[in-house]
Image 1: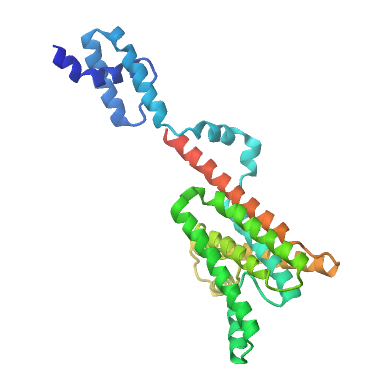
Image 2: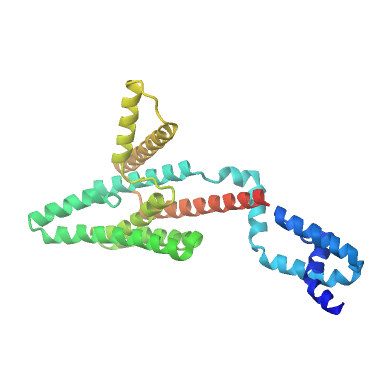
Length: 304
């Protein structure tokens, strides 16, 4: 009899936990197990002995639960904060606006780009053809820093997973702030290398997660042109293509609005500071991370 009691001890503890409502079964399989063990426990008629084991099972269950679930659940229940959390369209539109503004400032003041590496590659080829080594070294360094920014974001994604924004958000802000600090003390173009690093981080985020290019419009104009021809010819358009075309139109409008806003400030004698853009990028990263955490909490609550 003692041997049987030792074999059924975990089952009895589970039954006592279910009876005392300390352990809630999450699946149909757990529910069936709890019913069987409850029947065995009732047959034994020794429920008072099983109370310590029920407390032990409940402690194990609390240890297995993530400690941050309650915090995010409370955050998701607040309607004001929930309404302010972003979706993919808002995040991509904000990144496209910032990309247009930054490139407008760099193109007007320094005659180069920090987001569009196609233009920098053309400039590097021209400098190499005419043997202008200083210009070639500068543009080649821009390309390498951009690639370094993309590599840092990718490495953070592989090593840290969802916590990558805890590293990339401060880093992109520091890169833009450092570029501002260098430009205040020295009249040079070399501080744009730091902006290229930040641009690599931002564009790696948009192209890896939502898989949308926000710093260039060539592909988006192609998508819009193809949709326009199909509509004129009366062809039936796939809903996915319509959605992609609407997204392309939104990104094109957002990027052009960023160019117009930056150029308007420059014409009025107001030079935008790069740390403004760094703070905006960091806020978008954190904002998007908060939205993803809220979605994860809602999906967890739905499963439970």
